[in-house]
Amino acid sequence: DIVMTQTPSSQAVSAGEKVTMSCKSSQSLLYSENKKNYLAWYQQKPGQSPKLLISWASTRESGVPDRFIGSGSGTDFTLTISSVQAEDLAVYYCEQYYDTPYTFGAGTKLELK
Amino acid sequence: EVQLVESGGGLVQPGRSLKLSCAASGFTFSDYNMAWVRQAPTKGLEWVASISYGGSNTHYGDSVKGRFTISRDNAKSTLYLQMDSLRSEDTATYYCAREATVAVFDYWGQGVMVTVSS
Image 1 (cartoon, rainbow over the protein chains, first blue to last red):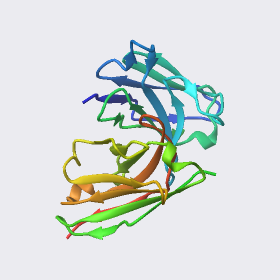
Image 2: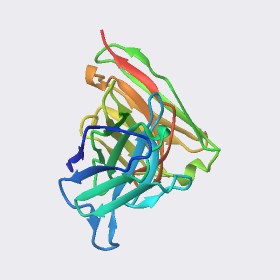
Image 3: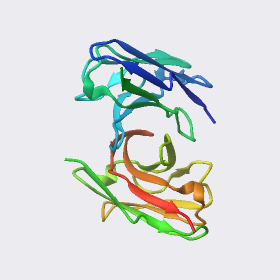
Image 4: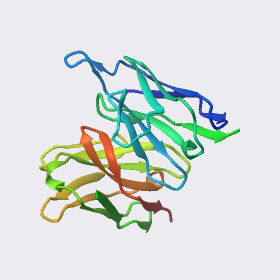
């Protein structure tokens, strides 16, 4: 199984800060035939269902603010929030869909400083 | 508006069975692969199972393979999860999710709680 490792597990932030969080996979998520990385990011706010933010490592979903930026390739990926807003306080999960079983990281929790 | 509404959860004893349903609306259900994803209390997300748009192909996570069965009724726009031989570690909120592409979950239901306990 592909293991997804997210760091840090939690991070205290202030509004307006730039935030980065990491997701590493135990094997490459880059499919050579189409040059796509099979990596998605989800946001889960307290008491809510997860919400898809980014797929293919860097493609933002419709309606997702452009302060959310996905980057990386192969085994190393990053989610950046360019200027954190209060409504961004949540747990962020990465997910690989390169191969079954599809696996999620343990999450990075953004908290208020 | 896409809506996914799960039902069928509850308290069940270890070794017993339970069947979850997910009623879909707001999109052409038969055009999309669908999935179940679960979340144990205070834990992260775990993919459980996926089914192709026609129902002919299914995939399962290692922890539920052989015990859970995913199915769908496209005429009723409903997804199912038959859970047999339940264990305490199956206790979780179960989410129904639409797959935008294989295993990219673009819409989620509100979730249904399943508690396995004697």
